[in-house]
Amino acid sequence: MEHEKIKIKTEPGDEPEMRVNNLENLMAFYTPEIEKRPSLHQQETEKLKKVKTEESITENQTVINLKKKISELKNQVLEKDQAIEEYRDRMKGLEKEIGESKLHMWMDTQNIKELKNKLSYSALNYEMLRQKNAEAIWTKEELSRKISAYEEEKKKADWILEDVKRRESENVRYMEDLRRQNLEASRSLEEFRRRISASEEEMKRKESENFRCVEDLRRQNLEANQKVDELKGRILACEEEMEVRESDLRGRLSRAEQSVEEMKKRGLDACKAAEVNMKRFGNVVPIAEDLFKLLKMNVDDLVSVKDKFDFAEFRNDATTHEEEGGVHASKALELKLSDQSIKSKKRYFQETQTTPSSAAEIIDIIDCDEVEDSDNRKGIFGADMARAFMEDDELCMHAVCAIYRRHVSTPESAECPTRRFYHFEALRGPELGDYLIHGDPELSQTRLVDEVKQKNPDIVNQCRMLAIFYSSYFIAMPRAHEPLSRSLSLELVSDV
Image 1: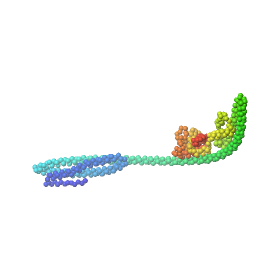
Image 2 (image 1 turned 45 degrees about the horizontal axis):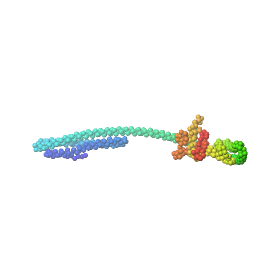
Image 3 (image 1 turned 60 degrees about the horizontal axis):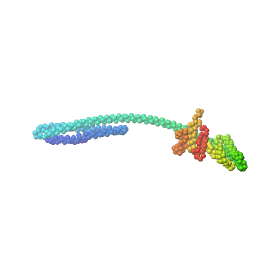
Image 4 (image 1 turned 30 degrees about the vertical axis):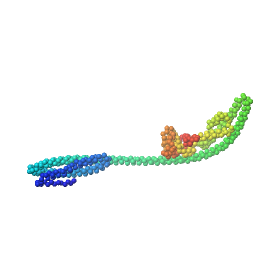
């Protein structure tokens, strides 16, 4: 700031009052400048506090801000140095003015001595001037103290600058560490890529193995279809032979009915004769009862003989078909008559103590029991099982669980440990079994079909593939009046 200087003309001819007034104006002019300096000092201290509070920001921002602040502090220090130079120049001016004022005071004292008698009141003004001079000296000391304070602040700024340089070196080391970690990460990424390529090659190899397994399954499926066609031809031949034998049996049954009617007539005649004899001879009642039991026994013997004959015919048919068409054809055509049905018929006649009206009624009862019993005991094999697996998803899941139970319970052979369950393991059979049982201790299926279809629809297709592949090893015994998927009891009939 440029200040205008007040020039005081102190010629010998001026009056002392004018000189005193000029000195007062000069001191009044410099006192506001001296009072403004503490406020400037407070502003500088506030700026330094702001600089210290900004150090809590992140390191990168702190370095940038500190660089800016350092430049600002350098500018401020330069400005302060300029201000100090200006203050020093002002002090020199004041000292010169004080020297001039002293000269004027000395001249005034000479004039006062000369005019002591005339101007007695000038002594008081002189004392005031001396006080103002003392105040000027005090301001000079205050300025020197402020200068020392500014120098301390400069030292603090230098210390802050050194701290910033130290942090810059730490940041450089941190960047080097980051670069080293980046190199290590790139190496690990290359290792992961190499592993991924190896896993892709392994997956391709497994896909080729699975493709070969699928080709084997297709080939075996074709062979199974051929076998099914052969079995269908054999079954048709067996059905034709059964029709011929059925016609023969119907002729025999008609002859049996005639014989039964004749025996019934004889029984009625015997009963009438027995009643007549009872009327005539009361003592002959036990003999008549024995005769009635004898007649009844003959009818039962006839029924049992007819049942034994039918059973022997069916058994011979099954053995001939077993020799011609194999084990599965004999199982598919095997039809046995339950002994319990025969016993129940005998018990019925004994409890009711009534004889059937005709042999046809006896045969109808036996035929109904035979059909009911054969339906309850007929098994599903081979091609029928494969067809059932194609239609029922839950049945396929039950089949996988059954194979898994056999896989867990069967120990591996020392000679060929992986022959039995090679396809089961190749088609992820153990994993499917674990998923379907879901931790069940009895190794039974616990997951529902809808749940599996909703979460993993591919699992149902994989279960179907396994079930169709092992369909020749299964037998299913359906129960009456129940859906197929719930009534079937799957069991492995031979080793896998």
